[in-house]
Image (cartoon, rainbow, N blue to C red; front, side, top):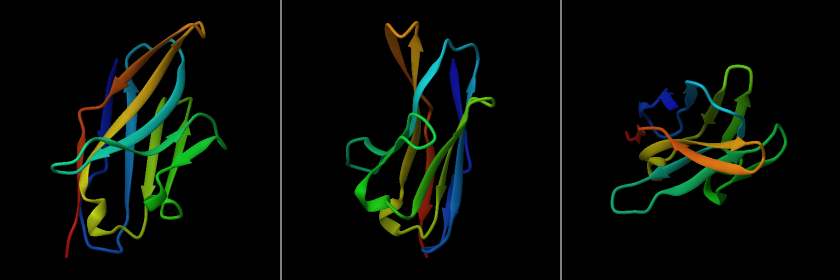
Length: 119
């Protein structure tokens, strides 16, 4: 299983980006999907997670600016980021929790994609 991320890049403050992450390969069942980020010198931290359409969690600083969504048929998770700020600059990592028969779970991570917010 590979997670293929896209949509990162350089944007001015106040701008928008839409990250996508596709699950490539065979996977038993997708439970939680999400995005984490890691800025230089900091630990990787949760940005947003989604279990179902309405079951979402956001980090406080992105609440109201970022929206996470998923398309189960396409095995894809999205992160729409609006009103971006310089402090959003980081490497963003896609995360997927695979569930096998509701007994075992496996964590899968993308390779990371750079988001830079700068004037």
